[in-house]
Length: 429
Image (cartoon, rainbow, N blue to C red):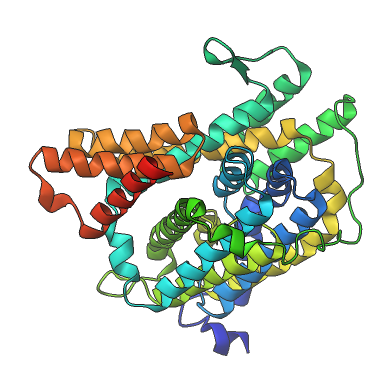
């Protein structure tokens, strides 16, 4: 049955290989079940419900990706987008988490519509490559600032805005240890390096009396506090449109970037260099975002960590199905998730930030019309504490600099339209 459904022989794989690949992918991204509830709880969301929503959204999205698109790609609430949800939209702009969930839901619906229409390639291709790289890097810098703040390494200062925290504080030292451990384990290509780092620091913190141990296994917490709590009507207000757009753009490009990155090794490209079953993969991702918002979590997206499972031989959706089952199993480890202190999750945020910021290296640093707008995008995200502002200011500067240097042909009409919309946003809202 598995052979017929997933076409294992056709893809040059076996059930054993696919199961091993699924376990490998899960280990590399299982940290999200600890980190995501910790971030969303800052927005006022019940951490137990956020934990369940995280596991279920990841399981549902990954299962759809495996069963419908037959891709060995796993999904979960996206890093960076969860931080923007909590620290940017809720704490920064003052919206309720219910309204923020409504914005995520709407972005998922629009993403789904785009996915089934032939305009999806036009939209993906309309944004300049340098801006796509800058958006990912900027989210990384944004996430890094939040991680350093949570670790206590960066604190506010009335004169300089930010300053170095108390490095000798026990919790700060634990966070530093966690980051160094994750980096070393990742260099040694150990699957689950981030999760191992989180757990090691947690155990040390409990042993030293810096945090409390709540147990390991229990029945899953109630999902009632977040289930179907999104405020779609509130998210339809004019002031929220830019936020919906930001969630949409990041999810769209994050997914497209992940699929393009893993496709060659997984044999998912045809002879013309195009992704096989791209429409189905985008439908799976957008559906996961809609389901995640209904459950009570921020945007669910495809994870680049899927490359770890593909590296060990995962080639079909069976790999994703194994990951989905493991996320369902994770539902019973809520006490362990509740025992993870902030100084254990902060190093994970900073390390993921380092990985995401690597996109800056691929920008053309010989072309000022490319790297200047890209840096505006990347830098303005952490400095304004907003992904929306970074995207808007970056695209506006891109259009103006390209036009001012006589390179109007480089400007896609859709890019120009988006930039104009942001001009109106900054001018009137």
